[in-house]
Structure formats: structure tokens, C-alpha cells
Length: 168
Image (cartoon, rainbow, N blue to C red; front, side, top):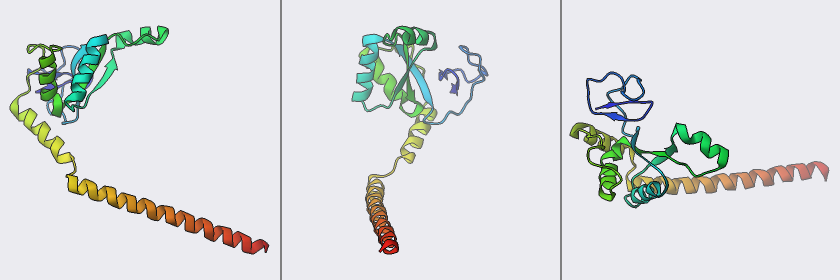
């Protein structure tokens, strides 16, 4: 599986050295959080896609296509065409959701080989903190904030007493 860093597309042919869309050199080992373009949509279809990805808890972002950016700026119109991006680790799940709602056909979705999909998912899962560790970090952060707040109050009180002793 190859990946184009400019147009954010997956290229199924591993022998391709350049992207067929933009001509940039492709890389063969994208990271699990690399944004991958999954579909271009507008209007109601874009809202349907966003709602479906939100319901499935799949992270995504969208960006107006470059050719439409000037029109939207000039007349404050809503975006015409937006590219929807998902992380590589969520690409397979996102394509299943979009195929399910009819926003993407099975032929349009890039086929990710099992090794790439499993590697991306494992790397994404390894980056997440376990719930117990995340809870401990939140508790320690709260205690640290309270200690910092107490230190600021103590220093302010000390400086006020020092300045008051100079004048009285």
C-alpha cells in the first residue's frame, strides 16, 4: 500500500513511484494517523457523512477543495465540495460506514491489505492510555493544580506582608 502525502490518497499499486493525480513521489509506509481522503461531498450529503462518522465514533476532518475556496470567500456561501479525511487506522471502518449509507461505492474505496490495516490499528491502540493510567494522570494533574494555586496565594500573601512592612 502506497500513500501520497500531497493529495492524501491511498494507492493500491505498490509498484507506483508517483501519484497518478498530483505527480508527487509516494511513500510506502504511512503512519497510522496519516489523514487519508475517503470521499468528496457537498451540502446534504456532507452532513449525512459527518453525522454517520460521528455516530460511529470515527475521527474525521473535512476541507474545502482548492478550486472552490475563492467562491466561498467572495460570497460567504457554504462550501461547495469538501474532501473528507480519516486517519489510516480508521479507514476501513469509515469506508464500511460510508458504503452502508450509500455515500461510497465498494469500487471507489481503496482496498487496504490486512497487514497495513492491522499495523495501523495496533499502532493507534498502543498510543492510547489505559483507563486506569489516564484516571491517575487526571487525579495527579488536579492535585498539582491545587498545589500550584496554593503556592500562588502563599507567595502573594508573603509579598503583600513584605511591602506592608516597608511602609508601616
